[in-house]
Image (cartoon, rainbow, N blue to C red):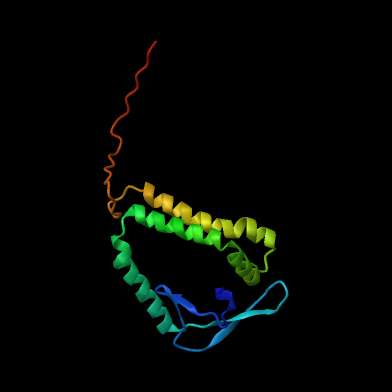
Length: 151
């Protein structure tokens, strides 16, 4: 089922859709025609604390132990999922921003998927001791340059 069919829209925290502690909502209005898209649940400080705690747990827990190749693979999978659900993302973007279909469909949605692919490629190319990897890389700074010319 499309997330857009749920009203009010729930939060997505720690891998699952949840309702916030409070029940207050705010309206998401379509800027193109002024109609009500849907109601969005409004979070409070406790909801933010829960989201931050969950994010920290992910960073210090399972995610920190995943090697670079697997992390990159997961980010590529997110990009593939965006591509596979393009129409749903496109509809949400159009409703939320009022952008023309052509603009959102040729720039915004493809760019979202491309960003995840770029992030995946960057982490695979980064040499830094903060990333665990199967094949450690030692980077040595350039000490001098040697040029050989032949006549």
